[in-house]
Image (cartoon, rainbow, N blue to C red; front, top):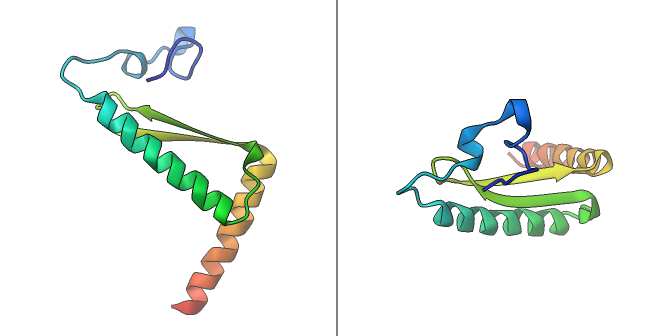
Length: 96
């Protein structure tokens, strides 16, 4: 879950669903799933040759308990991922 100082908790734009826990909602399972997904995404980015120094992956749980992965990229990393995604898309199209 997000906390004070994180997204969802900044004064006027307070999103109660981003910071409140609801009894009976299994946030831990969603967070664990997001943690695994974030690790898989990080591994895939490294395998694709992306410099992960400008990349942050954070696991969280949404208000309904589902897992959420937050991806934060520097501008350079975003451009690098975009180029690699375009190249991969062209290769997949050529194979089809």
